[in-house]
Image (cartoon, rainbow, N blue to C red; front, side, top):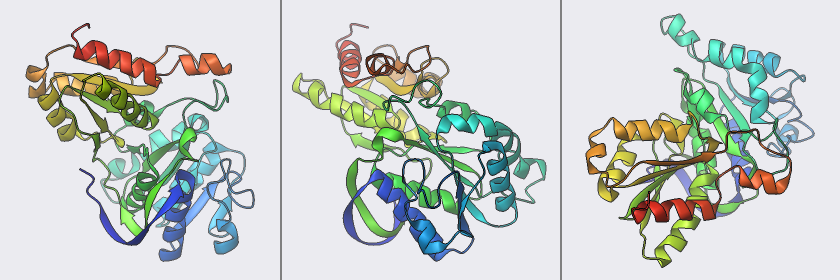
Length: 338
């Protein structure tokens, strides 16, 4: 379920942020082509302190503060990738990537195609994402479905410290641009992380919990909330299988379809706005496959509300799926109440 390629030793307890820093440290130390770029990632250590003190270890030629221009910084990163470097570009907030859409969507994603494969753009972009920090409408969005719509991009969403490290290292091996959305609420979460180099495959989902009564397909922090919900459901006699998508482009079609064939029910849970979100794609994928014939009930989507993220903490909590809402939707689906 969690196939990995690795050269690793002991397992350590690291936070999500520490595991990302560990991956960047390994990459910087083993490949001189790797450079870090972004606003305030040097001495300040990054908006969420993820890059930490790497500038002191590798110097300002390898860990570079960029001007306060997302479009300009992203353009330099694309150009650096075209010349043979392996840039890791950090946006302070995923929301700010909207200022760099030209470089991401029209340049990075398309240049390999437009030049007949003569070039590649081995670029990794890190995007702190999601709600829950009281940062309001312009700093709290989940935009992964936007970028997942673009051919030429890969989009990853690690939900554990282990996958945060493994997916970043896998992204650095990829010849095409990879966007990694890191949920801000996960940065302090701790978990077991193997030391040394290993990769978590892009395009491979993880079965976080096996079950027989329904499938919950979720991404990012929602996979963890789905796991928590599944524990309560188990006490009620409902056996939920939890699929952590891990990447939304490409989506692991086979793992999702195999689970739906087994359980006969599908609940899609995602933080992004419900309309045209990741769960809509998963729903369509199942509806267009032979797994549709195995369904014993309708496909249910539980996504974010159709509004900007509020600043008020109670309202903020209310507009994105929480564990009680997942439990209710799963219970209704399993009991045929939907």
